[in-house]
Length: 434
Image (tube, rainbow, N blue to C red; front, side, top):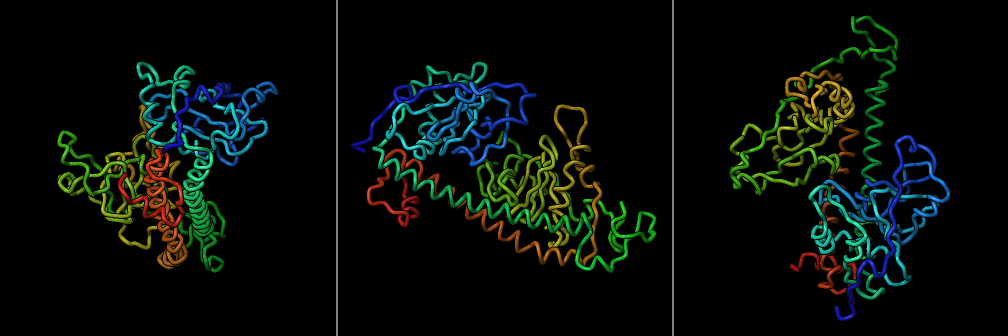
């Protein structure tokens, strides 16, 4: 670390505020970097999906260029404050959100955007943000605070190497995410073709009947193939509503039993990691709450209608209802059926209260189509390999992210030297205690 130096943001970056626009200005116009995009991404997304009407003067003042750093400047919580996102290219005619600050380098060749992107997300820099934030009313960062924030950086050639090493992991994760998205879209499209449009294998020779059992042409509204039934969710398996063990006893937590809550469901189709875990003691204190792997979990309080699949013996909190399937081959079909039922779940859980709440009795009595066994078996044969591949890719991403997150503080702090470091040595290096 002999050649590393400490710099302040005020010495090396100019600060600018973004645009605050009324809701009627969005939906058309020019690209706009939103607060959520800054908060959720290390780097500005390849394409900006939000559009806003802006003037030429606003686009010049609030431009988005390669090397620009964007920080969330205000938030309700420390967790969202000072989250960074770095532009790796120019975004013509784009502007950025008023609740963020743009930091534009004053000098060329001093800082590498990729290195900075990872550095600002490191625990070292995040600790500075927490120390300076003021939570008396609303967490915020002003220019005076930003000017005092410090970066401890190596020479530019080391920055470049550190950035590329960490970016390799990020690129692998992104490639896997793209494959996951493609597989999910393929499986979902097959589901729609078979069970929404009713063009399943052999549909041409199938008999369709209306609600009174009268034969009708294929495509008639409300008609189902003969032998298919309308059943309730509880007919597909046992319904378990989660519960939280007593928080007065710390020994109920921090064990090996995953404790699934709604925020954990953002990770994707398969729920293999949870922010909180239960001890065996805590889980056994409510043993009727166990759900086996390949149970389908559905959020039914607060943010309702999120659907995921458990990957091991788990429990959930009270905001989630789970379906323990009677027949494993129903997994793929019921997963997409429950996803498509989200509008129904939302309408049934609307009570006029501040938080949506779909009770166990309402959830288990939701109606769903049950195809005949032959079609379910065929769909399972087609969709199950896709689900297995998605699960494998998610697990690979977890390993890649864990490795990157272990390497990040060691590389950013200089504890792990990049001199003579090759990518083939990184896996072993990431397991060495810092």
